[in-house]
Image (cartoon, rainbow, N blue to C red; front, side):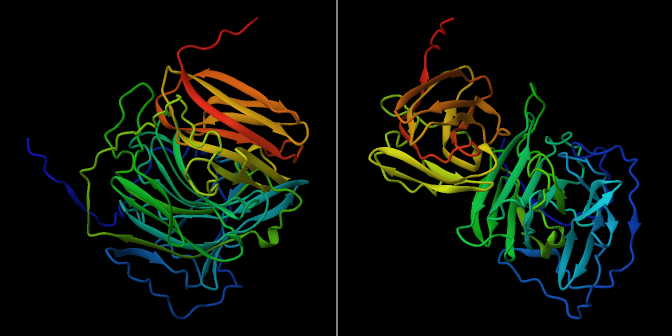
Length: 479
């Protein structure tokens, strides 16, 4: 049979599709929020609307410049939810204009802290375009300024209109265009969720100066049948083309499922939750405002849907059987890029790293609040189900302290192929050896991590002679 090229012409979908299931963690629908649709008296009227610019190769599908005096309900709907709806978040999403309003050319999602019966209570805003501006494939562009503060969690993201087409989250798919934690506003994330078991791929951008709370930045994603690309201020930082979906133990659905259906845009400002943690005494709710200058969605005239999932490429070991590149630190490489070794800082971690005298040296100026606040990683390690592996390295520090080693799965929900293992170092070099059996499905992107944050010490760490190798069998453990 001839392989005909299949092409889809794309139009906006604005039919009233109703999802038969809610996002993981949603309530049962009995929640009745307070409603306050009174216009905000503080909003200044904007007379002239801002036109959306043309993009070469695209047609403008829809946009909102937020130049009016209230939310455009032809495009957006409130999305009210009770506290604890998902991710153990604390806020109630309301329909009140205290939490959602348009002012000075921006949509404002504001988190508010109250005291009710002696307990802290939080309200905030969430809006969505579901059943009004749903679409399949295109480029979403949003310009926004995030709030700073522990426990604040602004997001621009997308979910499928018919959520149960491929099954409840994460099988249905989710596209996160931007997330920033208020406790670390120098760092922004773009993520795609899919599959069962839960898998994700994530890109991270950390600013060298300034923060995403200091000024507006433009966040965008280009979604095509066989590829997605994430940008911040027109700088590409993540490309994904190898997702999947399906039940555990069953065949995967035909690629490019689940991202071959209509999605809609959501904007929200969460408070608390499993990722950002809860607010504390440092969180200033007077300034807890997520400002969105515009949202624009563009589409091409047509998209080629005859796409195939790319084959995984597995790294080959060197002549000694080692999968680690620059294992002896003989090359003074750039530790900021995505090649070989990479040094990372998160959640209050401050420090630096350098390669000197065949040694990786990690300097910690601030320990941060989580294990990975100060982190050294190497990705792209081939992890094959049923194979045995050995991790070997030399390590010491300027004073006694400890740190964590593991092999993680960035594309498989950050599960651990080799578990987080705390080990103690002294001022004298020691050789550490760990062995494990890979029990999960094959992955070409296992990641060796050294996590040095939040350990009660900022002592400088030295690492040499790192190996990850496949072995025939595990060394018997002496009883």
